[in-house]
Length: 507
Image: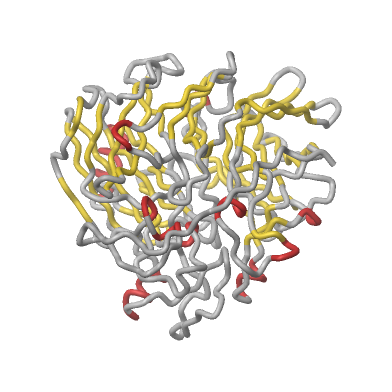
């Protein structure tokens, strides 16, 4: 069995005391848990602000809204030592840009389970990553057995601002006020859950997505009205945790790995995200679904690895090229699974790799794109499913006890060059980059990269706008946000015309 290079072990130094709150919306929970401090620290207000301070100049043709999820626990977790970053209550931060000015709004996603906790005035649900430990609360009669965290991804589709997570249906929010409007089930076609990682097909505007429940994965396609027009299910062979996937022109591509999502353990109050190599004894496997015929083909890698997130994929005359970040392990080790482990052991650094799937032989070959550790890869979404030259990601080089990300990278797939930008003036912990194509442009790299960064000096967040082509350390604009957006996962850009149409549809 071939093994990926394993990062050197590191020692994570726990701070002896949390920082003193600097803002009224800061909380003072007496914990040194990394995921409740620094850029991850909760912000305990729903906030709006207008005519924000801008350093530099926002591009004249940048008009629309950047929507990002916020991972923002509303109440002190039942066990702060076992709390994990994936478990925070979901919120949405919207930065609205037009005519060189910016405004901002951030609100929680008011799920049914959040309403129950608000009525109780405290956290009632325990965590699913590290288990509940000794901390438990009795749930009110009729309460859902597990929490709706609604904290993973957000984007406009079919005139709805939808907030996604792997454990249930997406929630709809008003795209301007960010008021929660309830769950969204695609006209009744879904009844349990859908993935947080949908794709929008450039040629049709249709949403391509799936659900994974136990060993069963179900594929869906919804048209621009939100009506499901195609679905197909297949068996993955194990309850793999399939967080992300990718599409090419005709295919949907999944990597089935030893990273397991175990609902049975979660219901017992035990850690539910495991690294169990016995589940895929011959290594991780690509499952490739032909979206036209529903035929599933399998490609063995012979490697024990897990995907974190994908850049892109495209088809060639002889096979399929897949670019993604992979990780040597992810989750609690199956042979010692009940106690939390430090964040960098649970989630070591990921690297950008290319896999080439040979359709004639069913075999794979692979190589590492870059030795720079990173996460949250993105492309210009207009190139989804076809050969692209550029990819962007946040770097994770430092193995810091305080932050996860520490720089912004651009990789050139044609030359192999990776350029890394540090944050200006001490800014760090950048979010996933979002690419916005310049209006009227046709070039792949002709546009802007939008990222949220944490300012350790102020404890607040800033939105940075970089020019993707020039890609220099100094951004075109720094928008001073009035809050700290607790470090979270994904987001998207909505052009002004799409945003305006969605707001009008709400009326």
